[in-house]
Length: 463
Ligand code: UDP
Image (cartoon, rainbow, N blue to C red; front, side, top):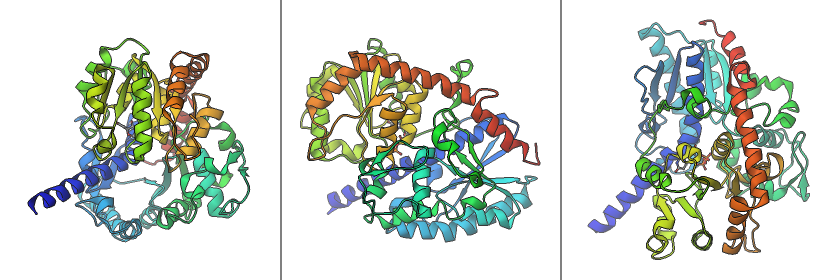
């Protein structure tokens, strides 16, 4: 019985950790945006939930970002503690909006802080009402690409009808999309009603906000951005990658502004340091994707049999899916870790390509660091991102699936070879480097994102 209880306790610990990881895809861009505001002379307060605050310890003592927390009603386990996604979202809305209002009131009374604006995550549209109670300017912050937001927007307006019955979907500013290239929730329409409500709910009030901020940059998504309705008052302010990865002058600064979860930094970096330039395949499926046993085995064999070094992030909860004895058999050829400092890994000279699930943050990071990709989307918005990686930004390829929806080891081997040594790989690398430079220009003084941030800042009374 003791063993059983310990097993359950470990399961909950892992689930809770993964819930924290999930939040990082939203917290990281918001924190980096706050840092950009601070660099413009604005005072920024970052509010997160009590549970998620474990993952956001501001590590820079001189930072003028103040970190505050509110309860979402699930302080012990966050999302994983709620009975269902629906329970989480409705509790977060009722408890969260009360607590956010109390916090703004309290900070107004106890400090000399007077807020001018509230920037809030698009998944919490109720924050707009809280801001209006206090007469604050409002900016809704979307962490996904403009392409994905545009698709969801058309669903919310009914201009893209579900379930999709045509083989292809045409949306202004986007390439023609096959149904399987739509975000997972639309492709599998009806299966996840709570998540679907959350996605569509992002557009319930956003037209009433003073700005819509998107973690993208104009040059990257020009076609779709130019087709967005004017009422959006859209401003691209990304990519929200920590400045030291975008600005050569800051590259020795190791302060991201927060500490992430345990990352096995020295193990990864020492291992990468021992490998020749351009010789390593980096593999990660992000913080949430769960692979099937068969797919995991095909990736493992594809990596083992290809003639390249590989660094593979296999989260604790996925580890049991690795083939027996795999870690021993690969020897020095591969390193498997539960989590790594991804930005530093992507920046490392030994890296050749990135086999990725195409989470939007991972795509932006690869693009900003000039790393070509092998795109193996799993769910969420990843299929749409992968389509852009291959056909729009041309920085990677999508290995083909068999009739069971599995990418086989031969295909993986062949794609890795092509990426690491073939002509196509060279072309992708050249394109990735082009985007890397454009991303830097966008956030540099006078660049498209920097100008949008300046415009936002100019409307704040405090500056
Ligand atoms: N990440 C990391 N270490 C890892 C794997 C991922 O720091 O070992 C970070 C990565 O840099 C990115 C985020 O986790 O910022 C993953 O976000 P993404 O949108 O790519 O995928 P998600 O986890 O939301 O599916």
